[in-house]
Image 1 (cartoon, rainbow, N blue to C red):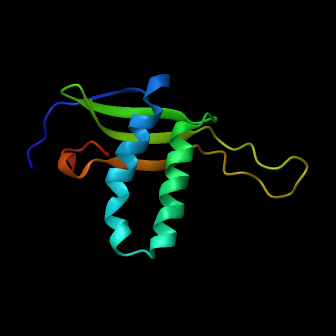
Image 2 (cartoon, rainbow, N blue to C red):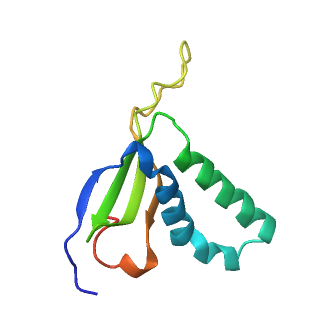
Image 3 (cartoon, helix red, strand yellow):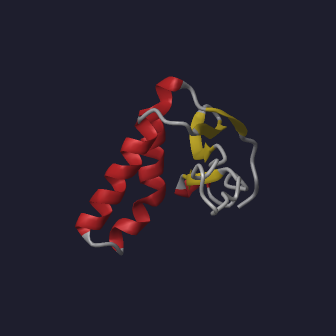
Amino acid sequence: MQATTFQIRDARDDEGSTLADLAVAAFEQYAAVLPAWAWALYRDDMIATLTGQDAAERIVAEQDGTLVGSVLLYPPDPGPVNTPIPSNGLPAVRLLAVLPAARGQGIGA
């Protein structure tokens, strides 16, 4: 598929349910290979995460006025206090999702 134009931007506060719908559509292929109860738990966790408020930055890809991708970026974990185990100090990416119809255009990259 040939790449088309898309914009990367911060998600707006009112887009939580849209992000949840996008992620469920992007990950729905797993419903066919997971037990029904496991898919339901995973789906519900995605919805709760994407509609809730936490420390993650919500980043979206928009194409022709439609959200086609999203990702959560969590700040670096400072690690436990007073412990000999250091944190890696790196941010974490979670729930990178691209709608199936929009894949192959570099949106997830």
